[in-house]
Image: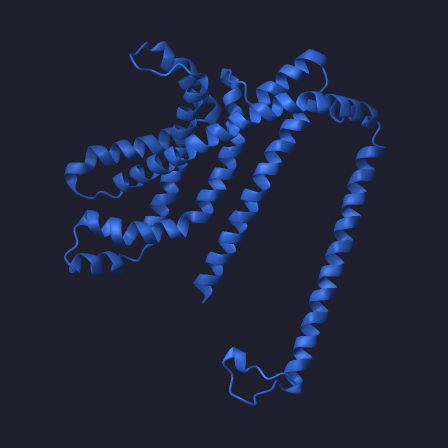
Length: 288
């Protein structure tokens, strides 16, 4: 039997026969569960492939969506457009975090003098959460330049970033607000009893705790944002979806859409798994 002094157990301590049997049964159960999951997954995949390939319209779908020649032809242009999607995402993300946090802080101001600011924050979150993102992109993309204001951006990608920031900022503000309200009131009371002002309490005590709690839902929102960068194509920038549309219009083959979908999946899946990892880690810490 193994001596576990390295685990901080007393010298000479060994596992009992019952403990060894329990661990053996646990390993056996884990191996059986893994084997069943693997076999059932393979069966499901084979059934789905059979269902698709045996359908009457499969030959036509194969020719119009899975054409290797069209795939290779469209890949360089769609990949080039996808880099613009990544650029839009990387610029919009910090702007959304900033807008969301400021709006959440504004909604937590309780002094009467700040009522107009608090009301404006409420109206902003209600309006921009109630309007579909694609409509906001249309309104900003076509309406903002039409105002003719000096300094108004005319670059279509910039207008798309503004629209995404306004739309997602409302959702992220509610995520931040939920995190701030989840901090126990005793934390604020303790900070104020130490002589900290409201701003210092929020900065040094409340917001750091709130941010740690809302990281998983924030990443979930950014997974959605990464996909919604394709909506910017509706106002004209040559991003991945727009490049795919150009190829499809030229040869009436939908394989370029498959290329764009695969590129988005390659970027989205790692972010989704990272979000799951953070959520599981947060759950483990709360259970300790």
